[in-house]
Amino acid sequence: MMTMKIIILLILLLAPIPMAIACPGVPSLGSAAACLKACGTKYAYDLCINTMQRSGMDPCPSHTVVATVYAVVAARVAEASYEDTMLALNTQLQQNGSLSGDERDAYRGCLGDYTAAESSIERAAERMASSCDLGGLGNEFRGGMMSLEGCRDRLLSPWIYPSPMYPLVMGNRDKVLVAYLLAKLLGI
Image 1 (cartoon, rainbow, N blue to C red):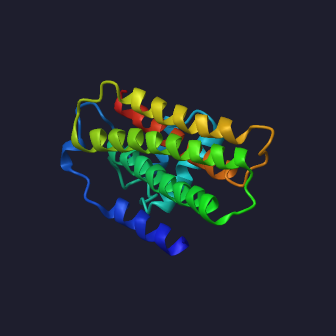
Image 2 (image 1 turned 90 degrees about the vertical axis):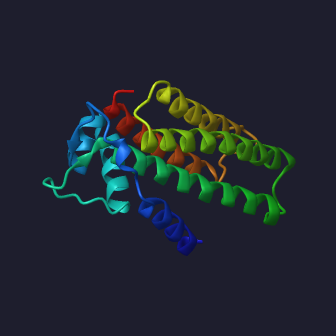
C-alpha cells in the first residue's frame, strides 16, 4: 500500500502544472516563505512545511515559484491522501467481519462524504492550475472540508469511537486546510 501511495503521489506531483497559473497579483516566493505567509499558527506552518518537504519542493529561500504552484501541490497531496483513506474504508468494509452494523453504516457514509470532498478538492486544484478566475474557490475548499467533517462526525458516534479511521480523516482534514491556506495567497 505504501508503494502505491508513493507512486500516486509522484504521478500527481510530477504532472505538469500549466504556465497559466502565474496570475496577476499572485506572489512568487520560496516554499518556507509561502507557508509562513499563509499559516497563522505553528501547527499549520509545520503541516505546510511537511507538505512541501514530502512533495519535493525545494526549501532553498532563493528558489521561488508563483504561490499557485504551492496551492496546487497541497491540493494534489490532499487528493492523494483521500484516495488512501477511501481504500482503507473499503478494505474495512470488505475484510473486517467484526464491524458492527453502525460501524458499517458510518464507513459507508464516510465513503459518500469522501466522494464529495474529493470532487471539491479536485475542482479546486484544476481551477487553480488552469485559470485565473478564482471566484468561489473558497467555497470548493469549504465544501470539501464540510464533507470531511461529516465523516468525522460519523466516526465520533459513541457506538464506534474510537474508530481506527478517525486519525486518517483528521489527517486529511489537515491536508485540505493547508491547501486552503495556501490558496488564500492567491486572493481567494
